[in-house]
Structure formats: C-alpha cells, structure tokens
Image: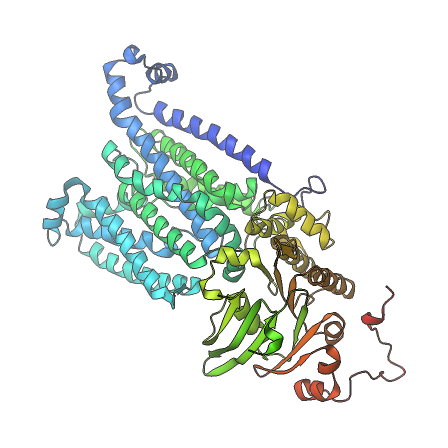
Length: 356
Length: 268
C-alpha cells in the first residue's frame, strides 16, 4: 500500500489539490470546446471577446461563437456535471462503485418516453406534440424518467423504509418491461424515425440552444446545490443504513432527496442530449483513485471532472470525422472504457485491490 | 416501574418485538444508569442484538417504549441521539477504500467536533492503532477493522459526561474478532468510560469477561430476562445450565492435563 508518512491518512489537502487541478482542466476544456470546429475561433479572438473587445471578430465568427459554440459549451458543461455527480451519488447511496443513474430507472423511463415521442409524435401523441412544439421530446423524456423512478421508489418502499435491494431488483424487472415496450415501438417505426431513435440513443450535444441550456439549468442546479447537505450522509451510509442512523443521519430523508435530485438531473440531461453513457461511472471512479472516496471532495470533483470530460469528448466528436459529427456517446465509451479497464487491471491494479 | 429504575436515564419499558409471528424480545424492561457497565449475555437467538437495536432507536418496538432522559426515542432527532450515544456494530464491510482515520473521523463529525481529523487520530490511539491512520480499511484484518469501528464510536462520544449529561456506548460483541489481549484492552477502555460517569451496554459471549467487567449482568433467554444483577447472582450453575445447557462448569477447574487461561487472574 502506498504509505505516505506515518500518522497521515487524512486526505483533506490531497482533495483540495485535486479540486484545484480539476478547475484548471475545466477551464482548458471550455477553451478547447469554444475554439475547435469547422470554423476555428482563435484563442486571441476568444480573449478579445471575453474582455469586451469583440469588434476584432468578423461577423461570421461572432455568430458562430454566440449562436453555436457558447450554448453548446454551456450545455456540455451542465450535462457532464449532472451525469457525473448523479453517478457518484448513486454509487454512494447503493454502496456500489458500479451503480449508475440507470439503476433508479431514469434512463429506461426517459428512453421509452423519447422513443414514444419520436414514433407516435405524428399520430396518437400529435395533440401533445403540437401543444409543446420544440420542447415535446425533451419534456417527454424528462417526465418519463421521473415517472419511472417514482414508480420504482413506491414499490421498493415499505413502512417508510426504502430497500436498496428491492430497488435494484424492481429496476431490473421494470427495465426489461420498458425495453420490451421500446422494442414494440421500434418495430412500428419508419426509416426516418429509426434514424432519429438511433442518433438520440447514442447521445449528442448537436441541438444545443440557449433554450435547452435554460431548460436543464434548474435541474442541474438542484443536484449541485444539495452536495454540501448530502456529502456527510453519503459518507456515513458507506458503513450501512444502521451505522449512518447511529451517526445522526436521517437515512430515509437522505435517500429520498438524493433519488429525486438524481432523477431530475438525469432525466433532464437525457431530454436535451440523449443518453450519454459512461460519464457517471468513469469520472467518480477515477476521482476516487485520485482523491479518496470521501464525498466532501468526490461530489464537487465529479461536477468539475464530468463537465471537462464531456466537453473534451464533444470536441473530439466534432472534429475527428469532420464535416460529419460522431455521436458523443460513442466517443465517451470508445475512449472511456479502455482507460477505465486499464486503470482497473493495469500493471499496478490500483483500482482492483480495494474493491470488495 | 421498579424502584431501581429511578436513576436510569435510558430506559426500555416492556418492549416487545415480533417478527414472523415469533417474539424476538418479550416485554423486556431494563434501564441504563450513569457509571454502570451493563453486560447482556445469552445464547444465540436470545434477542440480545434486537434489544440493543431497540435501545439505540434503530428499531421501533411493536409494543412498549424506549425513553432517553424521559423523552420517547421516536421523538428524538437522529442528530440529537448521535450526541447522546454511539453504537459499535458487529463486523462492517465497506464498498469504498476509506482510510482508518477517515472512518474514525466520521464519528467525530457526528459528534460535532471542531477538528474531527484530530479527534479521529486521538480515538485511533486509544484503541492502539496509532500509525495505522492511512491504512485503507478494506485491507485491514478483521480484528483491526473492529478496533477502527470502536475508535469511531469513541470519537462520537469522546467524553463520558458532557455538561452534566452522561453519554452511552452500545457495543454489540465488541470482542468478537479480537485476540485475548485486545479483548481486554477494549473492555478496559469501555470500563473507564463507565467509571467516568458514562453508560455502557455490551453484548458479550465470553462469560469470563462478562463476569469480570459487568457491574450489572442481564441474562436473556428466548427473548426474556431470566436473571439480572451482580455476576455472583447471575453466573451460577443453575442459570448457566438452564440457559446454555452446560452443567457444573461454574468455578470448577478442568481436568489436570488441560492447561487453562483465565484472563481475569492476570497480573495487574
């Protein structure tokens, strides 16, 4: 084991240092995300724009920066932060480093609702589609995710206690059910709808607008705002429900708050960017290796790291096959999965030894 | 309520817990008094852990009441209970590699310590784990893990009495995975806590240790209190043979060819 000095074991300063490095990484990721693309906006131009001397930019550059790059960067930041923090919270709540928001049914519910919106939008759901206009698909996904989580939560709660095991088992059953319903819908879809479904299910920040940024801002804000109030409770919960209660944590209330906040954050990200896998598992896991498992640092670190990872992945997705754009979910999995596996089983096996 | 209950501050009054039609504990009434080391003994399934869960507020009894300083435990906020009593559970597994210090620190945080890392360090030193601070909990031995958990409980109630209010330490088989030396040092630490005016409730399986350390012994069998009092009144042939089915073993030497170790006759 890497002993530092005898008498240590308090990783507070290590956590602060890693948080500082993550802030730097996030700034770099934002600059890269604003900079790259078919029409490059130079770093000097970005600086000029940021300091209020935007006159040196051409009209075209200004339009690209304001209408395309800025909302896209903002959306990537929010989606990445929301997914990674949600993943870290779920892993703490379920005491399992492999748990992700999919477990509480958000992804399945949001996915089913989105596919229903695409396939039935012109027929059965046409009145709803007309009423909601451009926000039809995102809102359907959001409420689908929330509804599914609520159903799971009600089933798994008996006598005011939410059983983690029951939640996972019900999640598997309901996941199979939503998968089957989704399959039925896909069978009836036409070619154009199938392409929409595929693109959406792989995730993309392509449709970024200020409207979408504003629509998910409150939900991401909620999941970030609860960090200081749930961090200590999630730490205590690692020792079990009973021990957490003995240490003064209102366990049931903590579970309820975290599950609802995660459902809202993830449902809304699925709604605006499709389903982007992997961020919620790989970011918290890497950070646990760098700063230890304490949620005081892990949760804010996941917000910063998740935002940075998604912006970098999106920059790659936009440039690697230009002018075509790859789905971002493909990039996060293609690059994230091998890195994850390497760290887990690599020459030092740093991740494996401490797993249960 | 009997006269002897008058100075008890944590009281279980006729508590009953029924699960699957079986009474795990059946109308048990006990009280914890400041300065007293109470030990619960009894065979497997006697209801010892259930009684401790009810007393700590973790489990709600189906009938009867638990009160802390006259207030029903169900009316106390978890955070207030956490400042009044700490609980050492049986073996705890962790999914994440917290260090020994980070675990002990959690107890200090629960108590509201201003410098939880420092308090956690002190607690580890009290259980003989100075120098183990940065060890990941999952890589420690069962006995070391148990002592880290004991340090966490000590960090949660570092002083037996604060502002005139006695604190309680609940220990569920604190000696289970410890060697003889550490069994005694953990119980001595708990006895000091009681001697300082705190309350200790411990579940023990070792009758020798129970008899040595208990000020007050409670013998449970089939969910009921079958004997209660000083060890001279409770650890005798009649009760031990009724409860454990082991006859004629109290205070008698084994056959001459079997060496025996009685920790209570150690040099002090």
